Image 1 (spheres, each protein chain N blue to C red):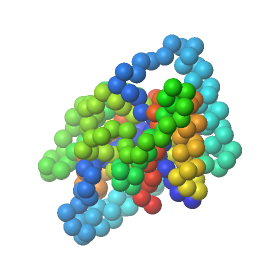
Image 2 (cartoon, chains in turn green, blue):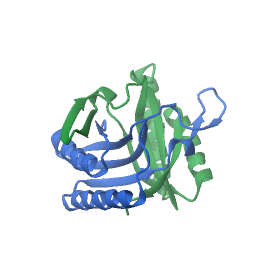
Image 3 (tube, helix red, strand yellow):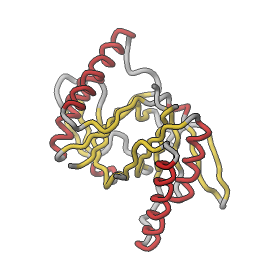
Image 4 (cartoon, rainbow over the protein chains, first blue to last red):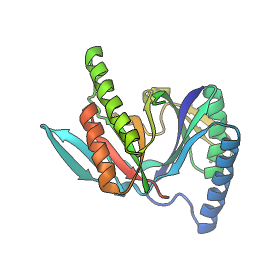
Length: 117
Length: 114
């Protein structure tokens, strides 16, 4: 089995036009999570809070430094993601096709080099 | 408890360290990983392949469109992620500091919605 990250990218505002749109996507995403669990491929799924709430820590000149805001100042950020454990890339992409329909956003599929067991 | 995503940020000018240095980094990261587990904070950790390995799946147009490469083309990229479950942001930042110190790269800390 191989682990894949399925990430959903959003602009900084809500990707859903109305509350009803959001509720429909959340319900479909919840059903997909259950389907992934039943199939034994689900490792983790989570929706991230707003990117402005991010902080970055780094070591600069030997001292720890903290800054507010995301590392990348881009218009789009990861809004949420799944980690799946599947047979191969084709299976990861098949789940991504279901995921993009459920959450109504583009889904990026990227393999892990390795995960901590 | 609250869940936080710790993203390992590879700067645009990052280069792969020589193998002995990489081995030392992996050993330090392994220790942080073990300490997270001992503290009950560890949920998931994985290192990513580089962004050229990514595929984007998009059905928003009504058709399924697959494209090679990452969704966002940037020089910086996420090299790995760690998910922790901790009391508060300070605890998450504490683990991020240890992880960043072990790897020598910036770490972005971001809360999950729920």
